[in-house]
Image (cartoon, rainbow, N blue to C red):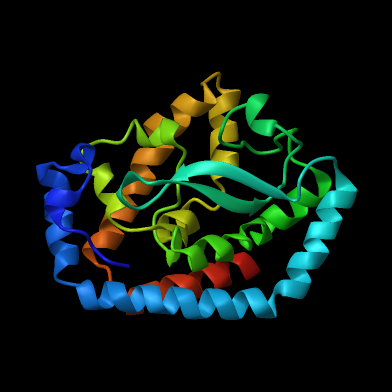
Length: 232
């Protein structure tokens, strides 16, 4: 990826907090370029190797419930750019119109096949396409919908200096996010409010720390840790 000049950032990202993180990444431009090369090479290889699995999952999803194979939702990535994420559909058609934009444990909108593939994060496989296109990266802050990005603090905006990621330390720590939100809902709290006020700020601590300590080696370790967590 290419880190654009600070003066060229969107106005909503120009603040002292973001500048601190920009300065850190500015010193790691070579690592950022290597990160992009890594993304292109491995996303292409994995798409080829995993194509039979992707085809089988697509067929199962189509047989299990009505609706498209892929879930395409607008998310936010580098410098606040909007893109459409690729995910295997794990919920009933138009699920985002009949409930919250985040899911909770035992969400009734989740399909039978969806419940199985979500456990091992196979629903994320199509995001290899987003990585190849440069809209995402293997390791980085999970892409949020604009509704939640609009709630970012000045410091949180720094996470938009890098592409949205498939996995991250925050993703590993919050692998049971659905269950956490489910507990909040059972106490009478609103799902979106609980996510914005409780879950999001804590996840962002990990995401911002990732930027401070960014290196290709750390990316590799996070990828390995993710695989280990999925296989547990």
